[in-house]
Amino acid sequence: MVYLDYSATTPVNDSVIDTYSKVCREFIGNPNSLHSLGIQAKELIDASTKQIANLLNINPNEVIYTSGSSEANNMAIKGVCLKYANRGHHIITTELEHSSVIAPLNYLSSIGYEIDFVKLDDNGQVDLDDLERLIRDDTILVTIASVNSEVGVRQNLSKISEVIRKHPKIFFHSDVTQSIGKEKIDFSLLDLASISCQKFYGMKGIGALIKKEKLIIEPLIHGGKSTTVFRSGTPATPLIASFAKALRLAYDDFNEKYQNVVDIHDYLIDKLKKLDVFINSNDYCLPHIINISLNGIKSEVMLNALDEREIYVSTQTACSTSDYSKAVYSVTHDKDRASRSMRISLSYLTTKEEIDYFIKNFGECIDNLSFRRNL
Image 1: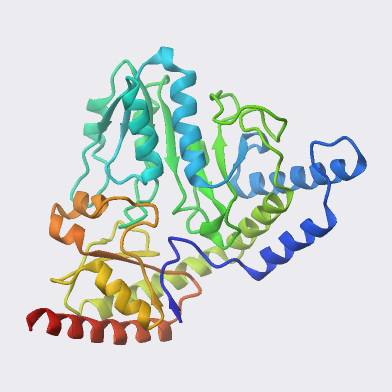
Image 2: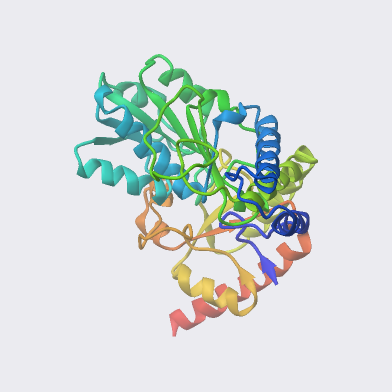
């Protein structure tokens, strides 16, 4: 098996599973309970939150646990816009956002909010002059992902923040799901940030919204005591403890892991250039993601052909509902390429032997499918 879909989800680290299992067995109390078992569970959650905060260089009170990034994105976008509706009803975003950003924006649009999409340059990065031009007196939120999940385009959060900070009433949210655990993030640039544990070898079903302490949001879920007034529900002690473990492991040998991905990325790019494909990712992209388009072959057909050989890649993001990649189209301005795109996503665990196996089989699939097309 060759797994090249790490940007969709990562395999859970064995140590993280061990932590989860141990907490399930040994910390059975409800952390909201006042008896000793509940107190022990709460103390473990507090210690885990402190560890996460230290790793991310934030305040522990700024961590709101969620079921993942989709909930965190909804919580951030709806929570801010509904709480501060008196400031305005104008939001700025990009065409590169995940569906869990676009969907709540569409909802807000249906109740009277106005959404503008900032222009992108030829590399897929935000046009800062256009961002400044779009800002109005009634702009309440700018939401721009740190890294696009399909093409891998990085945004310069520092420069974007400089523009936004000229307007103190505007909140800056970023979905940093594809950055967390892969590159260091300066959370001081952001008012809100969404993350998911499954992207850095942790458990599915746990993520967080990082929210500046003094910022108030309208909760999505009301009722019941929890770790914060902004998200009700019994805290998931095993998931939270395993979250802290996964993040700590992600930060171990951080630079070495990143360089491993860079090396594998460059090796794969050299191989892909010899095949009949278009490479959509560029030098401004995170090395963990390589987006390509097939020449005359449907990406779903190729995905199935590779699946039969136990090679796993993706077409669009796992949550996408469109028949073509809007992210690829935004960068290439070519709808045919956007409809035939595939994402290969790498890990520090990826080996050159796996890349060689992939390239060999990928080339054979291209030849076979092209032959059938020409019959």
